[in-house]
Length: 219
Image (cartoon, rainbow, N blue to C red; front, side):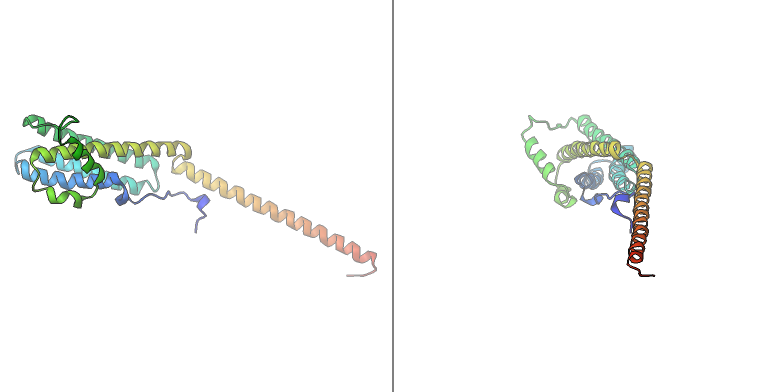
């Protein structure tokens, strides 16, 4: 077993536990149902684009977390890809509302505060699924917009901490070098202590021999 101080692969929090992953999963399931209910089944490329953007956001979080065990650089890169996909999805929902003269809920809208509170406090698909077939297109699109903004902000906050960690600890090459150097240095210290111990033992043997001779005792 590798000593923790020489550990190269980083321990990552399970991706299913990350709130931004959970919200991205909600976005994927919600987008699939939204397209199925409110967009044409054929002839509209927006359907494929929205579903693919939602899937890309979710999948790149998973892939980034898995790859992040070995590479912080790849983790950062894939989370940025996830952000880009979610931002693309956000614009698709915004375009849908604008092109159909529906309301984009803002802080002045009467249901805005309750929507924000619901989205902030609920992260799992099960919390939203009962409403997938009852929300209107305006309701569903505004809730999806809010989730896009929240998920993007959460990933961005996490990326800042990853980048700070990378600056302090470096990537896998730096960790490998540090582990090898630390291991060699510790082994050199252990070897030096053994040499000192042997030297002391040899000195002690000579001292005891001299003491025996002074008392006329031969070995």
